[in-house]
Length: 406
Image (cartoon, rainbow, N blue to C red; front, side, top):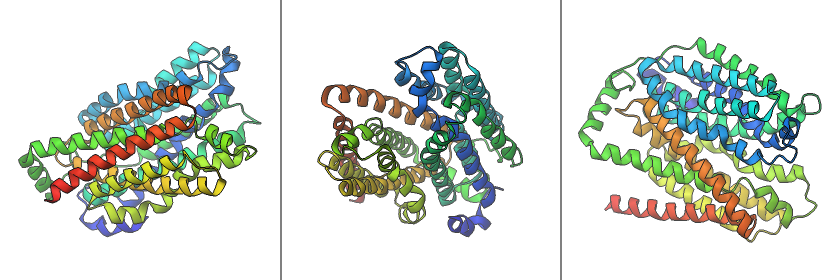
């Protein structure tokens, strides 16, 4: 993983070294454990808070996402104004405070308020990306953003397993307070990192970046168009993939009765396991042609999700989940490269705050559409809907590429 970063170390315009970039990704990974590992256990937490049927689980699941989306643009602008390291530390400490409050809440309203604070005070992903973008540029930045996505995927796979393993000794509710130590530890680690240099437009300082910023200013409308494209692709990618999450295990267990929850969970995790294994070679392929990489990723996601409709055996599900993992890796790495391009001549805090808003909006819409379509047509419907969104985006992206190549 370090090869790409090491080759560009000497010509990087800012002071961050490879080990410091890895430290930022590691801090995001450990701070994400409670945020990603505990929500699946809301149905076990809420009965102890008075909601005996866990009727509020679905709504509370998306509360941090909704309020995180609302707060992200503001925190991004404040980072550009007051310093990216300072706001990154604020995000980690905000998570620690909200986790402590959630872990010690003794009523449903208090617990819900803690989740609201988690969304408002958190935002570690956007803050981390903004910090990196203020110190890096070009392929070095795109690879750093790829590492951040890798940290998110690993946390998504590992956190629920760790929480489940600890549950016989510490209830998932109290684990919120226990896991608050992780963002606190991350804040201590991040305190040792340097503050990225700030320029008027928020981009990294250096002759290469100055030229890039001038080029971005000359393109004008093209720069704004590329940013709109990034936002659209981010929204549709999150919508197409997240919509398949909530009812996948229900679909698998309905098609393969007696399979067992462990194997169903492994099938759910397979696409996310692919990312850390494939991210490096995929980055090498798409770093200089991210639009093509994104279109290919959407096409593979569409094909894999469509295949779930007729899958009736364990081997077929395994193949489809692995194909989805390849498509997700292509899409995520390409989006990281597009975000790195979009940072040229722009304030990184504002950009990644807005990108976080777009991403979380896609997740909220995906959850709502998944719930409605499942109620009307069954657990396969959300997955087919995700396939349709991905296929349409792939067609539009491919036609745009063909127009540009003429």
